[in-house]
Length: 318
Image 1 (cartoon, helix red, strand yellow):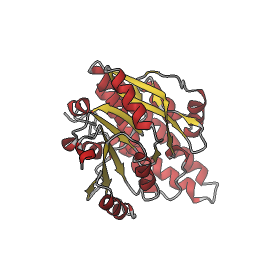
Image 2 (tube, helix red, strand yellow):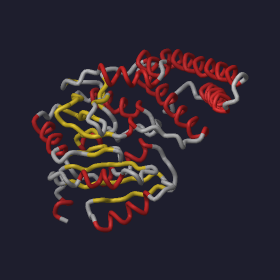
Image 3 (cartoon, helix red, strand yellow):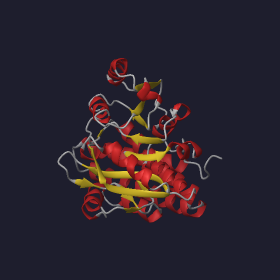
């Protein structure tokens, strides 16, 4: 009980069908010596995640579980523990992460040594130790179009291979793992809940941290293992793929409109719509000469995505 009352770090983990990874993640956290408490917010998992969390929290009082009856989005869920945070620092963590035994110590030490730091993230590596993109210096229309129009596998390869892996000040770090002063996280009111699931949610945090005159630091001397980018999900149905695409694209539109203005957002929307419609036409044409149903499915996905983007409101909610 004493370690809970005097926790230095509060960790927030959002789970959604995370039965294959959450226990290993929690075990890696508690190998660290820094006093901490962990809030796990589950977004209506349909697998065994909830049962596993209940069982684990019964034997580990430092784990507090919040169960949502519906998937309210990553941003919303990351905000739910805010009223309960009493620690000096808050650490946002994905469930597909393994911390090393000194991860929390090194991150807290860096924050303590420089009070001007408002957000700090580590180097992410795959299970084999290969480094991958962990920080971003820019997030604008050009950045978004580059990632959305060029094949993702190519962009991921180029970004992982040629990223700057030196310690430096950036716009934002990976949303998979970062530490922020709890007072600042509360002042920002956490994430913008309009950003359901997208890179733009943590980019928005980074921008707002810098607006408060704090630094955002990429700290590659701290290393974590992040499995997500190495996974290839083959069991996602077409409706789920459509939702994921829609959340990503509309998150980008929302971010640009919020931070860059209506003109850039309208330009971005027109390009994204045109790209989706062109892909729908191409896949439709290919499906006429192929017996593989996946091309017809992709054509339908991009056609529906085009319609969804067209219906997306021109102005952000106040």
